[in-house]
Length: 343
Image 1 (cartoon, rainbow, N blue to C red):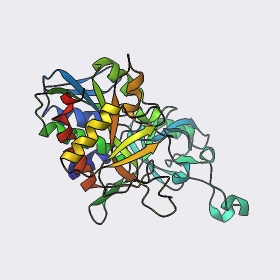
Image 2: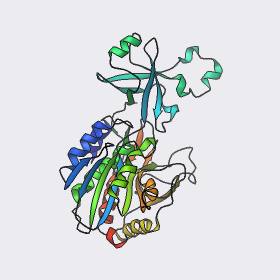
Image 3: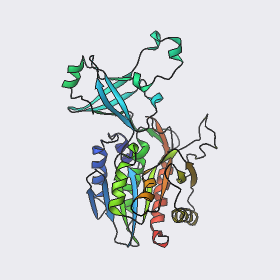
Image 4: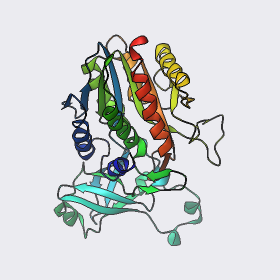
């Protein structure tokens, strides 16, 4: 999956502007699925199998990013965040700006340290004081380049390999989940269920795409395939973030929306135990994923997540293990075979 993941990471796809990722997912899923459609919100919905049980697997296509809100007289771009981006990670970063005339590179700037007051040097520079420099001479020049309020921008980082099977890049949250769905659908040929593999839009803006897709499909169970917080790093208390890279996929027990459905928890844990697959638990009461919204769709739909441990989430240098990602696909492949016994 490494080459597929690289292609996904290096393609633009900030929240609300998922076109390139959608095109990749649609093309890849058409190779292995019975049908693939794009609904009105832009979600990709692939279908495979003819079993009675409807299993929905959802991975969001978007990543956190920026939206231009104003062009200054001198041609600098002021912006608002798209999703929960860490403002501390933005200073002095390259960005890709998706103008009406095509993609261009910009940099996020601020007042140089040489002319900052001492108290300024000791503070985090707030997002409202940052700006994107695209090299424009003035506002009119920026407008000629196709920049306008509503222009999208995303962090600009290459996909790179680290030691011991680790990789880094922007948007691993959740290109990892997208790659996992594509790989899974190549492998499975379900007789006991019908699988709906969904690439959703605007997860980072409030689980927007998954709401309509879940209502549309009306599945028996939903699994969110996503990334989650790996806390195995300096300055993080294990009690706050016990998940570790290399210890397998993660089953969330509690998030900011719901408690995991007991049947879904039993299904995944028994699958892992019977197949000797390493897995972890977590609670993230301040977060959520696409499957989190399923319990309030229609009359309530059982759901759970299955996540890849990832460091430095919502920055341009997210890190995960390819082995964990491969194990997640193995886990899902095994789980598909028994879903009809639990729902």
